[in-house]
Image 1 (cartoon, rainbow, N blue to C red):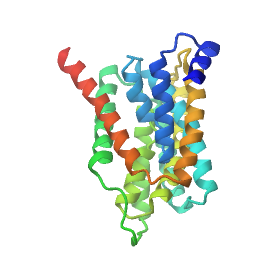
Image 2: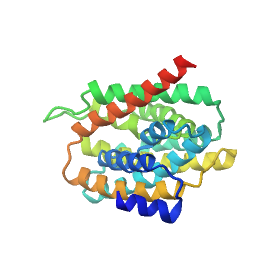
Image 3: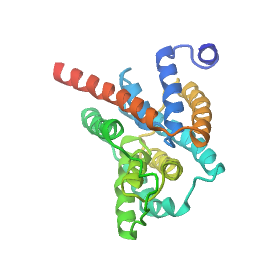
Amino acid sequence: MAIIVMLQTLVIPALSPILAVLVLLVAFLYASVGFGGASGYLAVMSFFDISAPIAASTALSLNTIVSGIAFVNYTRYRHLQFKLLWPFLVTSIPAAFIGGTLQVGQFFYQALLNLVLLYVALLLLIGNPRPASNPSLNTPSWSVMLVVGVILGLLSGLLGVGGGIFLSPLILLAGWGLPKQAAASSAGFILINSMAGLAGRAWGGTLQFADFGLTLVTLGIIGGLAGSYLGARFYSGQVIRRLLGVVLLVAVARFLYLWLGS
């Protein structure tokens, strides 16, 4: 907490301590399972009524940095299977760029975002994304990987998420890889597509930041370093998936409460 207060004093005193703590926690938890945390940052920022362009741009920036840190750590400990990464990137990169150029209304953005958050939350809470102890792994076809890349790339650019939060469960449920292999692929996928999404937003004029962005990036680096190191070396990720699911459900419940009450 002392570190957070010091950062606020040096960089942007107006930043909410609650927002700072939540971003640090999200970065730590998501990085531990190979994610960049964009959906978590978006959920957190939705509690503070931050506008859609600023929230998406900030989330993508945090996503790029945290997923990059996670990718380095998971690759460092030999969990990356390159064949589970590069084929999806062929179509996801241009799709993420296109998605980043699109402008959507605040309500449509919030509705689509919360549908995504609800899907991910239910998958994390009731799904069993881990294969058996002695799995028989399959190799996806090129056509499947190309189609998946397009869909995830568009979601990445449009919503300000990296797409890996969908890719990782898909790899596990389809039996294409082991949990930490999926985490490594997810981190790399998020890193590249977040960069493409940022480029698309810059090109389309939708890239916007608030003055608290630098502090959040600093906290994201701290959380990403700690979380990805522990995840690559020690964690199974199952308990963390459950906790993340609860956080996302709370965010969705808040959106529904505000929507139904308006």
